[in-house]
View (cartoon, helix red, strand yellow):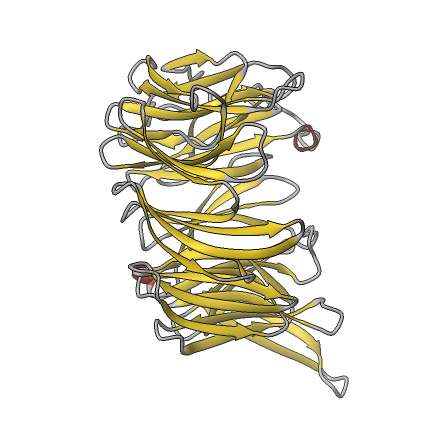
Length: 473
């Protein structure tokens, strides 16, 4: 039982006290030392993989550094009871997002922070009996020379797709290359560099669909306007191209389940928006499925539900519009207009309900009350949670976790999170179940895996810690 006690003075100056209790369990805490965790994955419901980075400022707080305490990146694993198993260090390097396959192999890019050395690294699954003292060596690695890994590699069947970037140099703009390697050994199978006439920059994706097919959004290297949708087949050849020369890309979200890409775009005449729309792209059919025109009210945020897309758009000023659009055909299901609001985010869920995270604004346009609202698939409001102290940062929902909505929040005027952040749980009626309050802690990542467990990373001035929590019953 977790007890939270609030002590204050009432309106008459008398001391007042209130204690609330909630049932929860923190199974274990895994301490990974100083640094900030940027990525977390779970394998076999048991083994946790985290990617963290330790800066020079982080290491300055370590009074007695050990041989494994170095500035740079680290990939660290923990077992099912939170004890560190093994780690792979990149002293003086930064790691890209890693991809973890079903066999426990990890693939990622490493890049020197003060030199030009870059690598593509593959690690084996390791041994659960290993401890932090084991010197882990790559299964294989490739010297990328002047290229570096951008984003998270894609792992499927026997192959690994990697987005590589060449930085701008001597007046030559940066450009992208898509390379497919054999996952076992790292042999290069093919590379795609764009059309024969010009180099490209990948701005969204790549996204894998079908049997080794790739969709991505790209543009001409060095360009800042327009983009194109491209489909690359399993042999590395472009088999479809759709140009959006006058459009500016605002938002994009990939629907892995149905292999659809939803894209929010706008068109401008200098600084004025003249047109905007939401576009559905079907790469399997090599076509644009539909387009929903929004006029000058451009889409800012989108989230995919079971059969709808929840869209936040800006008609101008502090007026916001929330729309639910049907994924099949693009018809409007419902629309709400919100006055004097700042939208933090939207979250559509499997039953097509939509959560809206926002703050009301005062006459000076400063944020006031935080609102979390749940709208049904019909556009009716189910419940509203308000708090005058916080602004929402991140959120996570799963119907398998008793319809609990978890969110991390910070102080409404504490942009730098000097007072830390908080973790709140709201039940299916919008009632607050749980709040984890620690002013020295900042919550970064939330992840359900398996569906009855919540993994949370947090950090403070002393260390980075991983918490394993059970959602409230």
